[in-house]
Length: 268
Image (cartoon, rainbow, N blue to C red; front, side):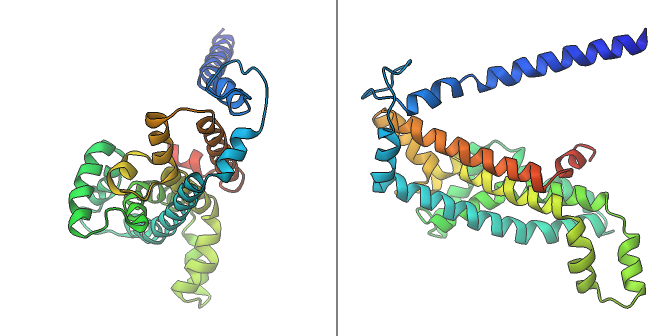
């Protein structure tokens, strides 16, 4: 009986998860057709199909400039988050200093504190540093949000890593920088890849910080938000589809090359 109950519970849980997943994907059934609409305004179902709104996006310097800027911001954010987060994860995992657990919890603060509060605080700091309106200033702010993802994922990989391999390499005469580069980091590849892609996606999709810090130099999410406020045409649907596809590709690559890292994080 218990075995049948467990099996029945698993089936019900699977059905419920499938229904929730389908509900979350329902908007895509509207956005994708509208992006191919031949109408001059948002209309569903579309009267016909055309690539005109994708063409308008590609021909509009404002959209292209915002897209390139978002890619620049996300790329720099990824580099900074990985460059700071990986050493910090090593330090938090390997250090035996008193209070290290408190510091470990503090690194997760940016994903716990509401983004609007963080944005207001950073605006006050960045205004004094004259970073408002600079794309690299937005990238630095996004790095603060992305850093916890890197620390958590890499830290989870380090906790499941067999330190005896490092000791064996050291016993054979290898220097510690060489051990980290040739022994530790290759086995942390799933965690590193997942952290890099999540940093990129979290920056590319971030709106609230960009609204406070980007000024006239709009990122793609801010451009989309302003477009909804000022004028609504199917171009926004075409841009949304392209953004969804980019994020889906990034998450797919994360799943492919970072297999196991996210699962390991759950056991943290």
